[in-house]
Length: 324
Length: 297
Image (tube, rainbow over all chains, first blue to last red; front, side, top):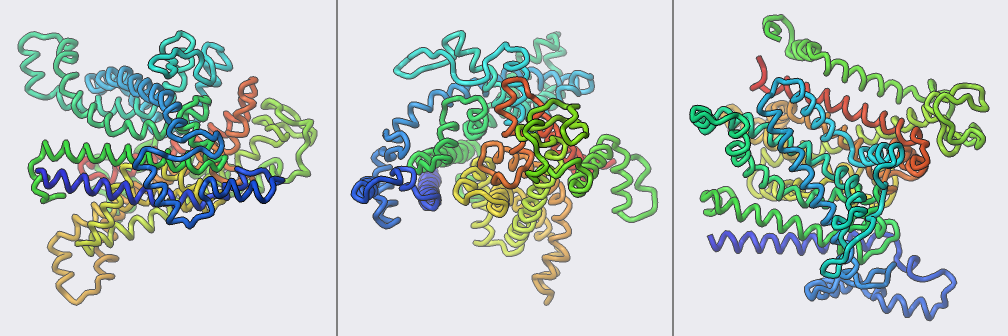
């Protein structure tokens, strides 16, 4: 078991190393950062000084080596546009994205699971068919378009909810949170709903499939024989049993929620990580792009690693390396 | 659907017969065909060439649907910020969106299917290396990969197709590998491999035809996904350059005007996009159901 764990951790580390090299070399190929940094009428001396300060005059492998060394010390470089350390920049934007992602995941679960359970409990009712049609739409309609329609409907036509930004925030532990003020909460609703739609569709499918299967099981038959009402069976037994696969898939999908936040944050001008990365792509802010991508890659490698390890705990065949 | 297997005729004919029985899928297919025709013949049927600046008049800009412009005809869907007829812009945009979707779908199909089938045929190290990489990539969201690549490669049709293919080929590779690996282990393929038949023949005659049905299903879904992905990237300002106004860009251009109630500039291109994507997905769903032996009655 220990050998398997070590092997997987080593593999993950190798993947991370390869990813960081790919990202670094790839991002290096974009544009010329000197054009962004230095105004065209700067003197040659200022030019040289700036180039030397950012280390842009040294060969690529040396820049990568330096980058890797600093990365291991937690130093991700300085933003070319904002002039502050990238780590600081990312940490200051992270709460907004986390808040949005958590709100979206919660909304998807709280709305999706009951709808999916109903659709699984009464598969042939018209309401269930409507729910399933909506879930198909949730899968195929692009996120950005749904965001536009939400803004058009709730912000422009009805004027109920604001169309962008975070609204008032409350400082807790040194960072601002929107969900603690009524105004911030209002700002959170539309982006969270937008980001949750894809997960909502998935949640409905998962809950429906699970419920349909479990309604036929002996557990439910015995519960019925014991005289429990269907409502109680659904709440006490079915919900408990379908929650295992749902929680698993959710853990896996949290990373992609962060990725999709790129689109939602741009539409709703939500000042999170996704907005930051789009802005930095447009302004060729290399250190920020590299740091964001390395961070996301790290997140995915970490998620995959934990999934592998958890599966190994559950499935003894994997541990002996037969399928691995 | 109960008696169709009694009818004489080729499997293709039977397939088409089954397909016709689902009115949703038939309707969706009709919509797809209609949209493709409209897009192909756009230059001949639109009221104006939306990208000939001589045709545009700022006096016509941002007019609501039904406005009669300075050229004397009705702008059925209104006009955009440059006074462009929106219907014409949408049909030209559909052309570009479809072109991108089909090109990305085709190249991902060829690349993914080749890698997947080759991995199944060769096995061993090659299989491990390829499929490990594919699985790793599948765990990473396609949109992020495409976003990064577009940022790295710059704007342009070719670059965008490369980014879309890189983000999508893995789905084809996984599907092709799954089907081909199952087939590879069957006795008749093992027997064929023991004879002097060339590997090429085994791949083309035995592995590819058996991997084809699931690949076709993936292809329909992925063309729709490529169109959606391209629209998303163009909406974010990272997809195609200004000279190639796809539907995503039309929607992005109208976004700023939506706040003061000029909804049509964004909404109608969006509706065209959604109708196209949903119709392709519905056709794909039906093909999948028909090719799934467990659902066949």
